[in-house]
Length: 635
Image (tube, rainbow, N blue to C red):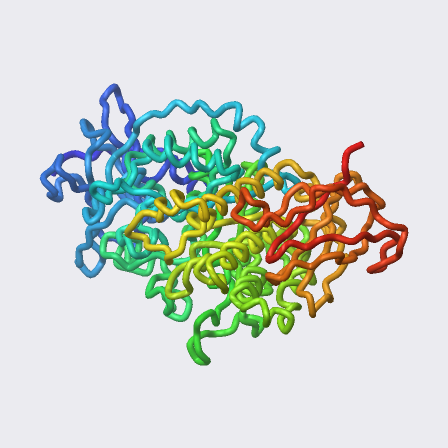
């Protein structure tokens, strides 16, 4: 047996933090690290496997034999470690773990920075250096990520955004750095969000069944190539949000499940440790060392990859003990409730740690229930997220828009109801990948009517979204009216942009992003009730909405009119918050967007006629299936 030199990067302080569930940079100590020891180059390995009887490092360098056995630490932490000389960057390896029953498993390194391309499953020692060139962005990103600034997110599945026509192969990270970065910039989005980019073995999981938590997937290139992509976004002034999955993980043989012959990462009670919907394992949030693993993983992507935020997946499934479980399949907490108290503590610790270390980023919760104070600070009793997805708005809006316009008057409250709770959280309005799969159709595919009406409805929906309080998220393809459902195995239908009908939709989304970024009324108070005022929400017969979006200065106010039917409404009187003059600055029915051209080119001066409980009012022409946005003319 080769000599594995006794060596450690772990201090007593590290071990204490690890055991307390408070260590946030374990990736600096566990995993594989190329170091020099006594002037000999080699690699230090450290892995947590407390139920192991023996742990070996195996790879090409030792012909996958048990010749390099790690040493277990004396302190009872369950960490095995050691220095192996003369191996380094680029070597593949696994841990061969013998448990107390003498059964043997071969596992990938939970802290590996790089992995073999699936279906191969080995870890790779990776110490490549990368020189960041995003210093200017990092200095000012707090301004870009602030809650009182525009936050318009383009959600991307990297494997299917665009593919090579000739062979249907993925774009590489470096190819994305050219094509995707330029596209997102031209469209005017402020942020891009990647569906899970961490290593995953199974393509149909879309990345939500992770094995390599600390490794960007090798499908598109090396880790430094992904850094190159993020760097390119930052140089264009675009923030990067990563989809993060601390809720569950697959039971693949080389993964975290039954890691050392015991339920190490997963909860041993199947009622808490197995997810019936996704047939996957659930982390044991009651085990402090597991919390340290997850906290460190969140910090890793912010630290090593300069991520500007984390969108935390499936928070509702974590919070509730009875999530997707029948009676008898779950056990109440110590107070008789359904909340997972360990998860609540973990999420509070997560957000406290993230904002302490990186106050200029955002954490965003995908949480679909009415759990209180998800996006409120922990010191006020909240979970501490920066934002929360507004699933109620998404559901009600899509249900409303799929109805033929003749029936909309019977469902008028569905399109206005979201404002009754819009300011209870810092909401992000999501039209995400989840809404364009499993037979739901694309967003365009839901729109009723003939071809013209479908496009008009889509523009109107997007206009509602961008003038509704809150941050925005749009899944790729929706921005130009993708007709078919999302297919993770193929590119978006970019050829549609050769047709002016779809080009018009894309131009409309560009215009909305530009409006969102330039009109203070749309972002300064987007999470504050003082930033919104209804003028009229009860004109059921005409299916019309009228409201005001407010900035900190009343001169920045915007007046918005929405006509949810294909009937042009002439001489439509509406109350106004200010005398004017008002000027139409954007209308979804403009010819350049594919509309019919019913726009208001003349200024509107309000009459001193009280209407809709306002001191002033005026008559407008309402374009069919359109949204019109007016600002006070700057005199």
